[in-house]
Structures are given as structure tokens and as C-alpha cells.
Image 1 (cartoon, rainbow, N blue to C red):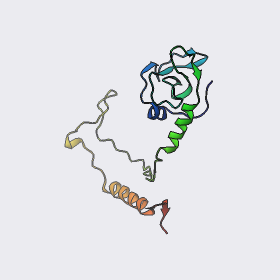
Image 2: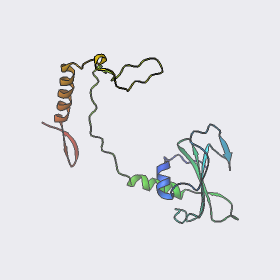
Image 3: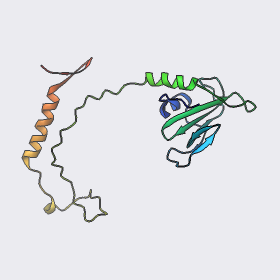
Image 4: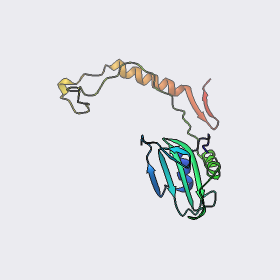
Length: 168
């Protein structure tokens, strides 16, 4: 009864909204079994008006982030039955989502990380103002080198309608 496709929580919520009732949780270490389905979280929907299968009641089973199975029924007197219409609708939803255009180059690692404030002991995370006398100045060449590197990376890339291209 489990489906191998990548049905996501976001695609289900975009189709059906948030569940009316949740049993278990994403981080719940307790595994349960119901109708032969192993899960640690179950979403329950009642009185759905826009279900892809056209039924008002649906249960969706998850194992952590992974979709396991879904079952539906038309009324309280009917038996629960497996359904694949939600999976098909969720796959269509994922296809319509916008793609992220990640065209920003990563900064080169220079190994010169300098923390802003000095921790007092092992429990201290820093992040507070230090007296001016304790602050170590940043060498001018470090700032200049980082800026020049960023400018070079930016100048190498240009943007047009088809994506990234290297300047010639």
C-alpha cells in the first residue's frame, strides 16, 4: 500500500490545506501500525469539499518526512480504501511550482574568519559589544582582497533570459 513517489507535505497542504487532526508527529520516535501501514504521523481530514478523489474523509500516513500511504472513505459507514488520486494531484502541483534560479556564486573560502567578540568561557556564545581596546583591527589587505574577489566573480557572470553565461 505504500507509494514510492515523492509526495511532499507542502504539495498535500497546497491541495487540501492543513489537516483537521494530527496523531503523532514528525519527530515522534513511536512507530504505529494501522491497516497494515507503518507510520509515526497521521493526518486526518474531515468534510473535504475539494478532495481529488471526491470524498469527504481522508487519512494520510507519514514516516518522518516521507509519504507512506493515504486512504479515503465517502461516509462513516463505508470501509477505508487506498487511494492514488491525491498522489497524482500532488505530482501535478509540484510540476507547477516555480523553480528557484540559484545564480549567485559562493564566496571563496579564505580561512581568515574573525569572530566579532571573544567568548568568556565554554558556555558563552559571544555576540556582545567589547571595549574598544580589546577589538582587533581588520587588516586593510583582507578587506581589499575580499572585495576584489567579489567584484571579479560578479564581473564574470551576466544575466539574460536564458540563464547564466560567461562573458567573452
